[in-house]
Structure formats: C-alpha cells, structure tokens
Length: 178
Image (cartoon, rainbow, N blue to C red; front, side):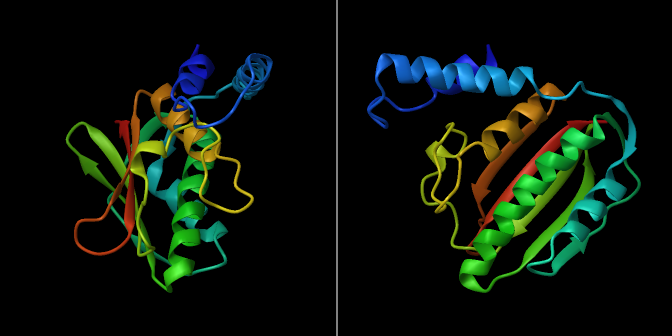
C-alpha cells in the first residue's frame, strides 16, 4: 500500500512511463518494502545513535549539538539508515558551497527531535523531495528520502526537509515519539 501511494506522488507527465513500466516500478517498490528486514524495536539512546552516524561521515567534519539523554523505542538499524541518508545528503549539499553541517537532538514536547542543518545551496524544488525516483544528484536513485520518510512514519514519527530561514541551506527534522 505504501509503495502504491508513493508511486501516485510522481507528477503526471514527469516520466513517460508506459503502463507496463509503471506496473514494473510499482512491483519494484513493493518488493523493496516487503524485503526490508524484520524490525527489532528496543529502547535506544538517541544521542549515542546520532553520534555513531556522525562518526561514519568522513568527507566533512560534522558539528555536533548534543542534547540531553533521550531514550526512545525504535529499531536502531532503521533509524540509523534514515540518519545516514539525511546526513549524507546534507554533506553533499555543503560540499557544493564549502559550508558546514550541524547535527543534534533535543526534547520537543512529547517528541524527540533530530536535526541536520546544512549550509548548502538550499532546496530548489521542495515539492519533489519525497517523490520516488526524483533526484537532482548525478547518479542518484531518488529512493533515499522516500524510504527515510517511510521509516519515520513506521515509527509513528515524521521527517521533513525545508530551506533554512536563518541562512542559505536546508534543515532535516526527524520527530519521533518518546
């Protein structure tokens, strides 16, 4: 069902797909979602997870804005993959402009928020961010943000991306229940 909804978000006329091609792509998305590993939900330290993902990025030093101790019930591997995706995108953008990336976490009401702020060129076409197969990157697949949002929603959370208001760049916000 999620794959069908995701495919429906592709703007009409965006791709010149024949009916059999659209069916094939739908099947590909359905298979991808169906073959995702079984989720193992447990209590995880959100700060430790963010620090671990930040440590994986070697192309640019990431500034860390550490929040307090926040424990959440989640599948650590899935949230880690989501964080890798958004951090990788932020670094890609900042490398274009020579900017920085800041990642951190904090409590926000009854949610935990993870934020990734970049100093890249910003989002040129925000309406297509979560459209499957839409990409502005050479060699990009257009799948990373779509899957990341599905992971957030499967955890009863949300993932948003927007242009920063304080300067050039964008911010990714992941909200998860505590």
